[in-house]
Image (tube, rainbow, N blue to C red; front, side, top):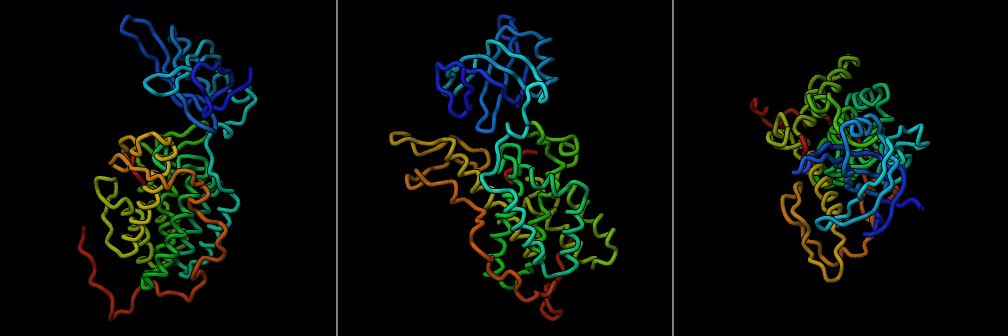
Length: 367
């Protein structure tokens, strides 16, 4: 029997293969029988699965191993594909002779090319203190490798290997264009905020055999972690202007925009405002495209998608989207040199006479 990609399952088909266990729950029916409620995945998709007439020992075996060797059949339940598991065998990665990373969805872009492009943008930060803080944070042990592979979220947007790098590079490209239009913005500060704002998702999320939250992610979260890392980098460097450190921390602490979205502070600087809106824009548009791809409306189908938590509406999908390629999505790696890269150094702060008055004291998310 041939193995199937989960995205290509058809009702009535038989299926056999090794799949990553994304979630597993031990349940009981109304008549007292036990069953397993599973979500299995390969690199193409996640699919719900049910193992009837199970027991607690079998569930414990599933909990201990990240993979299942499964034999079953494909059915439809409430309009969605579901696997009815007839036989299962919990296996480890070595026993199954698989690479766990091969079971996770991946960015459609080349990770080496994205990393090179982002490193060039970081090197172009003209403010020496800002650039050194960014590099000092990136020099944390193992961080560059984690940054390269991490998702930007568990499910909401860019939820795949390389998703965080793709998201950050997309924001950096938008930030370049924003600074071309609003030429009085501090480009160094905004680019640094873009690079650092989600960098601690490398510690907030686990992504070795599936996407989930670490204990540190649940109890502290990436916003507070990044702020700590910036402060630690500045203390290690020892000679960075405290105002620079303060503004960088504010960019990170305010990038969710609202207190109810997890930001300890609302944006109080122009760069923090820009950071919040371009971050929100990229996340929402990526989420919209993901919803469109999942809906995949046919000629006779409704053009409205399901109610979307992140977008807070039922999105409408114009027919012009049909047939468009994912290659149209950012980041764009073939544009040549971004506009104004390497432009003359902008002042870190405005001249004294034009500086504004100092401002007063003051879980699953869409970005």
